[in-house]
Every structure is written in C-alpha cells, then in structure tokens.
Image (cartoon, rainbow, N blue to C red; front, side):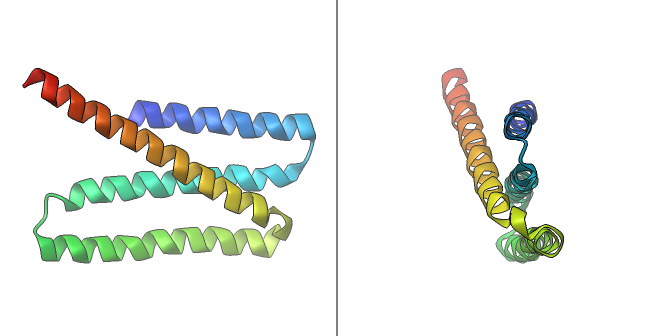
Length: 123
C-alpha cells in the first residue's frame, strides 16, 4: 500500500509540476497543494479506519469522531490559508483536493481488492 501510494503521489506531483512548467501559470500550485492535502486526507482516513477496526464499538466511534474533526480542521486550515494569501488558487486547490481524494481512494480499493483476492487463492 505504501509503495503504490507513494508512486501515485509522486507521479501526480510530477504531472502537476509539468503543467506548471509548460503553461507558466503559478495558479496550478494550488492544485499541487490540494492534491497533497486530498491524498493525505484519504491515507489518514484509511489508517484510522484500520486502527479503529480493532477496537470495541464505543471506542472506535469516539476515535473516528475525533479524527474526523481533526481531518476536517486540517482541510479547513489549508483552504483558509490559501484564501487568505493566494485567493486566485482556490479553484485549482479544490480541483486538486478532489483529484487527490479520488486517486487515493482508487489505489486503496485496488490494494484492498488485490489483498482479498490473494487471500482466497492461498486458502
């Protein structure tokens, strides 16, 4: 999971930086920041879900609520900072967040599906 996520993060970063280099528009740095934020959000969610799955129901719900607020605060902080200092980056920031979340969800789903299939073959 870690290796494929890292490769996807780096390849997405390279594509965004290539787009900045080709167009010369610095607005796309907002999408880079959003891509990293969305990717980090999903990996944080996945890690917390795995850790919470080993707890009893009440503890898991409490932990997931706390971590939801922390993740929401992280994204809000990024959006507010970008709005305060570079308001022209907001649209590309939102596109980057969506792209990062979608790509990382796809990677997690592929890895989960591959792991389940591997378990069935070996059984």
